[in-house]
Image (cartoon, rainbow, N blue to C red; front, side, top):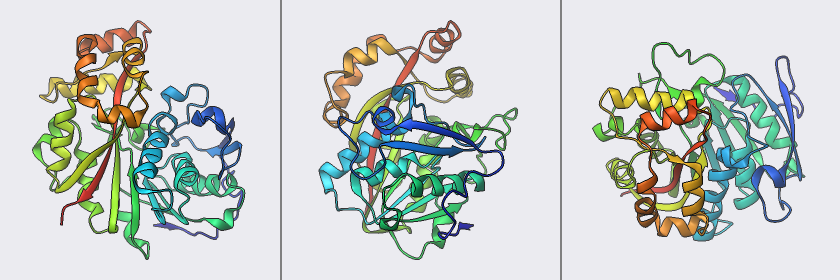
Length: 339
């Protein structure tokens, strides 16, 4: 289902919406002023929208992961390398704003499972760039890349930050922000066995679909919480028939920690993993000397340096129940289909 690109600006502030005003510099942790998006962001959100962590960028996926990954992509391929950018499960649309700031695509495609999330995201993007006529924004509703087949062209860069945890029976995927952490396992044909063990199934399903969506030089950037060993993550992604390369390696504080870490505990009990987390002070100490792009080149060494501080899932779960912050590393993986 497509959301018409001619939707009036401001229409996103409908019934049930909440609003957020935040300083772009603070949310994205920019070193200077933004060049292509507004200095202050005005965002309309719904109950289903994954909330930007405006007061703590280290907990926010776009600020701590997507923006550095897109910067790395621009450094490798050039700031003019992407004409059409697409994002899967956009939330508030701040991932597209990050892409506009770094890569300036002329067309942006956003998807989400919830129609109202897409409506608000499209509106948020248009209202938070100085000249909305410079960017065509199209919104699509549906699962993974399926709705993007309605787009008339191909995609140069597809960004995904998908949930990892299969939804247990007690989780209602239609409620609140459940689809930010959990997913329906009913559409995972062709996913390699290792993807299920290490909770990478949805990422692999997206890569399988991406082949028919990308331009000849198109690529996918997979943003993945690295709670499994780095070699296992890359091996699983490579098994889908894509060449992979690390664009970024960084860390973030675990958001919704009891819910998410509890999900990893359950999956390990069922034979998944093993998985690991880290104390926040260890992550900060080991990774602070590196930018995400620099850390990508040292990722295996950094993982080894962190090993002595790692929490297993039970220890991590006990830590968050005590109120101690727990984090994890994150990889931004560039994936190009093998001919």
